[in-house]
Length: 428
Image (tube, rainbow, N blue to C red; front, side, top):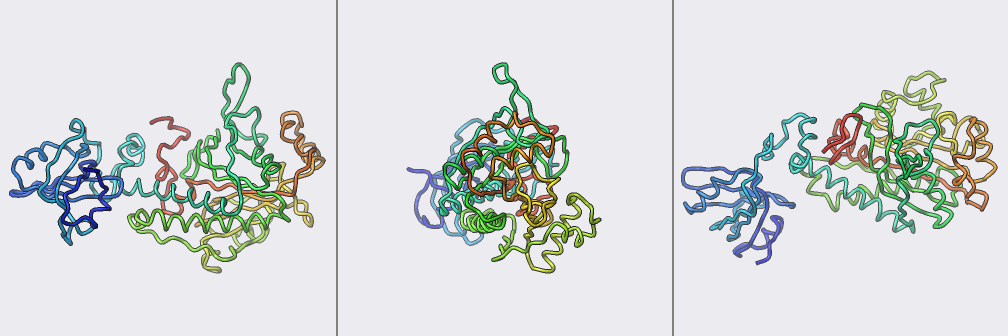
């Protein structure tokens, strides 16, 4: 008899079925026992009245893996309106050692550090696994949206010979006796691949050796990177980003509707045109000094509140960041060279995306590096490609964990990361 998932039980009323999963909860009453079995799709209520089976169930601690064979019976008070009756119950392994917190409770009461220390079992809780399902659906939507627009998925090196952006902290390692680094970004490579496919994207890890110890930073996170050629300017990139976000949220609704319901979420709408303000205007709205070189987290929160109140939008573009705060490959605004054709996207009070138009002429790269006192040699393999013809292009990168954290209302990106790596954590 083939095993079926709990979600299929409502279509099998009156049939004998086999389900399997983890002992989620046991309720032992005088004449009957209720065994709740958890699988990847949800919960199955098993009603046990046979004394011998009841004795076996009594000896099974929570999280023990079991197989149940029984009859599917309609019961409006049971999960999904059905339960399994007249069961046989067989352990599929030894009795489990219960985790240091109760997974059957509606919410995990353990502190976040305790959950992270015991991540392999904490992630089994429906609220923790729901966030990961939403993450997976968002990535599927990212890929599907870009595939439909003729983008090509690429896979770039995660060990590199030089850092992507000068002055940034990188993780150094020994590469057969030569110095190397974990990649902070696929930026250089995705630009080069525009010269091959015109439109590319990548889903992969990036590494930042910045000693941040905040609720919004990780030393390793998942970056959703996009680069596209033959753009007029950064506004073409922003339009692709807008459509990508819409596709991601649509796929979350389609693939992870159960997870969205588990967490009680209302997914945001992506406006047909996401409101945008220039950096100088953003400073005014945020009440920041006119000579402020960047937006602080408090400014981002103020700007997001303004976008919600003024435009009814959870998203806000801030364009034209000062060139001094953008990487050397950023294209300046032709009409205001001190400002860039770059942007950030704020989502519910947090910077989610950085992007913009890039330089595409070899001479401009030489000039940009010289203006910053940077030698060309460390970037030679990257810069040299621009001698061979590159179209005007631009791109963006979405931080997956930040996106999911904002989407589910988590206060810490570690709540939506399976095995986070940060300043203090290298295990499990």
